[in-house]
Image 1 (cartoon, rainbow, N blue to C red):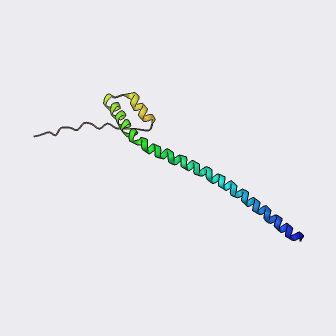
Image 2 (image 1 turned 180 degrees about the vertical axis):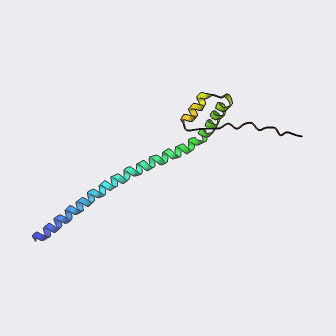
Image 3 (image 1 turned 90 degrees about the horizontal axis):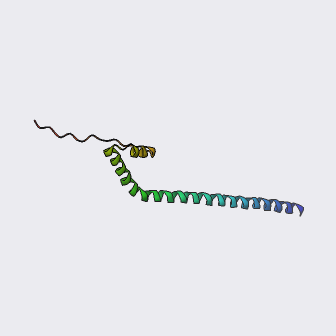
Length: 95
């Protein structure tokens, strides 16, 4: 009888440890899911704003190039945006 009680007690302790481990894993998993959800939301919002950012950056680059504005050029460079100015096309010479 004493042996059965020890076996049941050890089994109960193991079961309790497994339940506590399961709770810990559940909480950890839920935290990671929340982080992934926040990142997905950020990406989705960034994609929506990209429609605004591209023309804005293009307009700033055109303005900096046309007016040789060093401040706008520095602002774009600080954000990792670089551009080059193409020379105007040469008119075709006729002989």
